[in-house]
Image 1 (cartoon, one colour):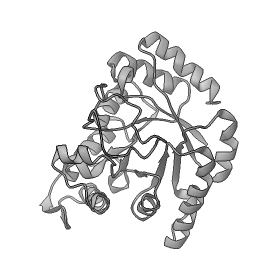
Image 2 (cartoon, helix red, strand yellow):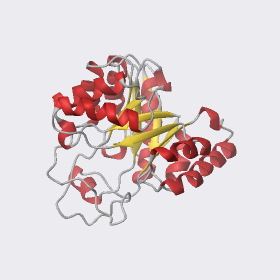
Image 3 (tube, helix red, strand yellow):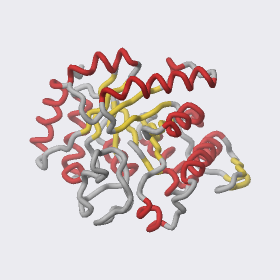
Image 4 (cartoon, helix red, strand yellow):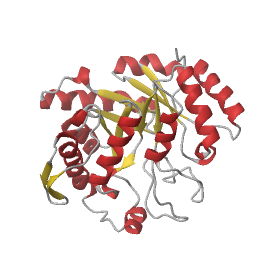
Length: 287
């Protein structure tokens, strides 16, 4: 089971000096991948419930710096050469899929094929309203956008006809180094997210659930793969539980998890961040 790090883009992790230090140290210490999440908009008093905490509140101050994940990962790509890169997650229904196809392909080319596009449907109605995107049916919109991404990456020219997006004989270059096979990973802990991951993507990213609940979700993924005739062994299963300790890693690996994601916030000093990553690697047994 690989061990990755979700630490960039927010607060101290939005500083270019800290991003450089964390990215280089993570690669040097053997972390498999750097994950970076997204919120375009935060509000001071949201009515929407954050689904990954018991109190329903996102544990990030509304006035915190939160970088665009594709740009932050592009910066990280420029100071590394081997470590994987992934959005964890980009809120796909909030974006124009043609623009995301272009940006994801660009990052994949600049990183020499190290990028995976993690996507989710979002939970904040206030964020969608600010962006002028309907909150209703965002899951269906995400499904269609994933198909549109594949069409853009595979075709030259590319055409697509859907309910939410349509285009005819367009050219969008560069292409990802793996073409339409650029990995797409679906985030979210719901049954719908698991079905979406197996039907349309290359992996699943479970975030913020209790460690005790991971086995049941992974079993659900395996059942859905079997129902659709997909080899579960080829499926990426990444999790970032809310309460795991290093002692839980063997249990998670036995359950079918292929990638454990450490979620933490770096210190403000690049020198301290470098030491911090090394300590995390020792704590979590990264080799």
